[in-house]
Length: 261
Image: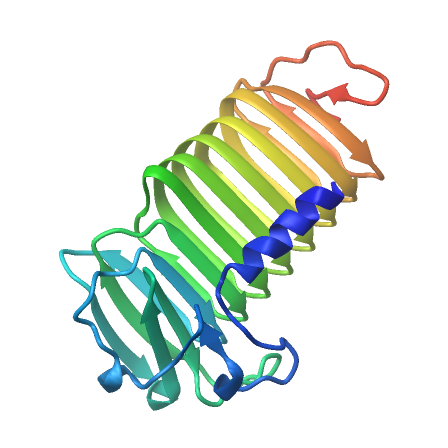
């Protein structure tokens, strides 16, 4: 379980955000070592990004299209800052103060393909399609919300750290997920063949599977699986794995199989 929590925090680190998370401002923030600039100064001539990283309270809508386009609207739109490098588009704001509310702007982004979403802070990010032939990754760190409406990938990695929320639908052959804190992964419409889930704290996760699900739960969190999966759980505390309609093999002393555990 500890290793899974460390993996989740490492996922936050790969946001490429070099900042102290208390009382920071955008002058101290970089994405992959690159500082943000106003949108009119952003060089869009290179390859389109496949990763979107949002730091702050703003709203981002990502749609699929032929080429990269970015538009902004709403309160404080002129304060937004953007960085584009190494396949990642970073979005933050000049007057960023994590934990404060200065209003929020909306950023509309069009990209040919999106395989990674990174959110830190209280913002909201919506994507109409996420995935590809290889791996997709979603990180939610803080109190914000990610809505991934159509995932289609071979391998999916999910980290929800803090009190944030992930809503997701689609399909993946395999999924590795960590929920650390009080956050929720509401993925009733996501179907996976194989899943490994680690929960530390009071967070919850829901998804569908007809394959195999292995869960480790430390605390009071809950994992709920819809479908006919074969489920096994290792738990410490009052947390439980609910495998609705699933196959229930015999339980061991430290590892329990779950119809409802």
